[in-house]
Length: 182
Image (tube, rainbow, N blue to C red):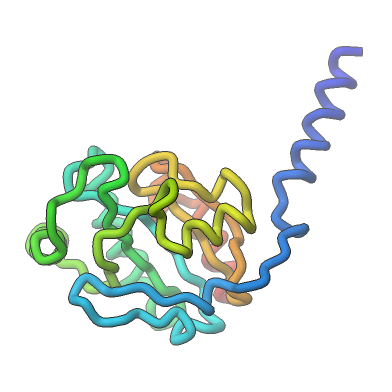
């Protein structure tokens, strides 16, 4: 009996995890954000392309994931993938200003994918894309820590989210990206 209850609960949780019921009054491509250099990044320019959004921090134990982010960008940029780094001090592990973050990323990781300005990713001051993600996908879209990943599909909706421990080049993420690119 306990096994049947466990199976039933598992099935119910699987169906409720889905974002199929989201309203999506707006899609990802409806938003803008400032780049690390102060220019505007208009997500409409990414329309029809999958986007992997990752909140980053210079002083985090996961900072070496910048290498994996750059590898993804190099491997899939010409096939349409956008890798977007969102430096954030929401967990008190980021440098104090954009120019220091930009220099850190270029010198230590030779980053060439787009980076935003330092941006809040949690709470009342979170950027509107993170508020949108939570409203449309639920709490699983709210970063739990630095290097949390949100994968946007070609329709501008959230495809999936990944924990900080999941490398950007993990088989799980690569398979999902490749399915979106095909």
